[in-house]
Length: 319
Picture 1: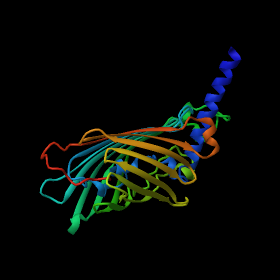
Picture 2: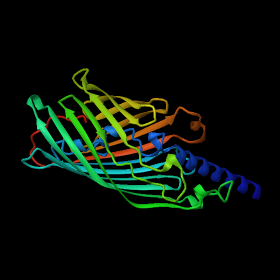
Picture 3: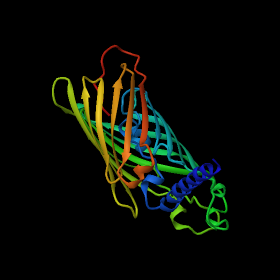
Picture 4: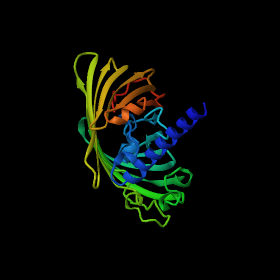
């Protein structure tokens, strides 16, 4: 019995250290380790692009909870909350987003306000420009990790950065059945590591450039196809992309598949329960050897539109 406990404990710490080291020493090279990923990003575009604020014509709230690589010690856990609304009788949108993310001993919490200004054209085409501003709270409990070298200076001290201000920009163009967006949610490369050890890869936040696009194709009277893409670029890293395709049945049931190139694949379904409420679930599996050590990724989504006014139906929105 003692032997089994010792082996299980060893597996726990090996997994925890491996994940933490992977996070810390690849943060400057891999977009996935600094900014969280979402499979159902199309329901939470405000987190990615401030120009999305106010684009739905009513106040809208989105909540996403994501548990990545389930059953692996120290695996990423992400919680996101976003709310935005147009300003009445003005071409302005306002939003607020809160993001909590934890990977092993590394935790960060971001709180951001969003502002957008929209230029309106004929046929319900709109082009919005957005600004994002807020702060990140970052900490890494490195001293609690078990390491091969107890004197390793990299893990000798915790990292506690209680105030990392940042700003972001974005543009978002949409019509009745398609959208295009470009954004950089964080423009300031704040210093993260301040423990006196020169570790280039974990010293700064990285600027992420995002491109997003989607189209809604009417296949029949009640069936629509919605392909979408989200591409990311970080300096010194290869471009990454999420490819999604979703079938919409009678504007009530959404069934889709996704592929994160070189990383994972999965499926999703969403249900429009009422005029205001939409819920969704997605499941991802990694394509790398990492898949043998976890039970995939679960993501839950809730979207609520505060649409209690006129009984007159609003134009359908699929993004």
